[in-house]
Image (tube, rainbow, N blue to C red; front, side):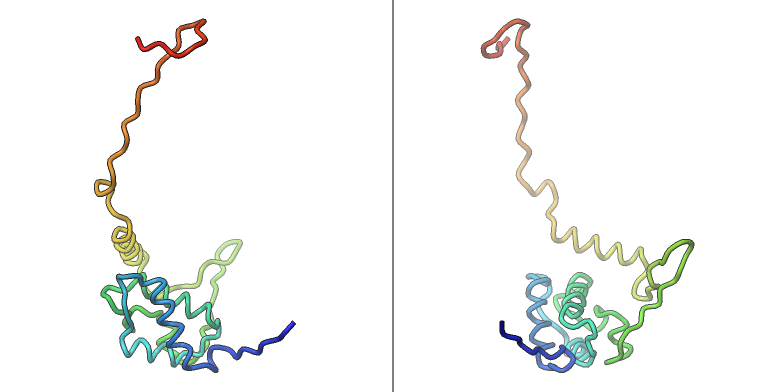
Length: 153
C-alpha cells in the first residue's frame, strides 16, 4: 500500500480554479459556460473547510441559479462572499422536539422555487414536443370455455 499525502484545498489555491471549471462543465452543460472574474476571485479567496465536495456543491448550486450563461457573484452563497476565507458556522434552531434547518438569507422560498422550476422546465422538453403516445389496441375477450386464440368478434 502506498500512502499519498494530499493537502487540503485551502492550501492548493491554483486547484480551485481548475476544479471549479471542471464542475462547471459537468453541471452547467451548454447553458452555463463560464465564470465572471469576480466570482472566480470569491471562489479562490474562500478557505474551503468542506474541501472539494463543498466546492462541487457550490458550483452545482450556482449553475442551477445562474440567470445567464456565466456564473456571477450573485449566484454564489452569501456565506462564501461575506467572510472571504472565514469558516461558516451554521446555527441550528431547535423547534419543538428536534432541530430545524438553519435560517437562510439567500432567497425567499417562493423565489427559490420559481428559479428551480424555470431551470427544470428548460431542461425537460414539453410533452407535446416528444413523440406521440402509441395507441393501445382494445382487449379481446375469450368466450367461456374456449382454449385457443381469442375470437375477433
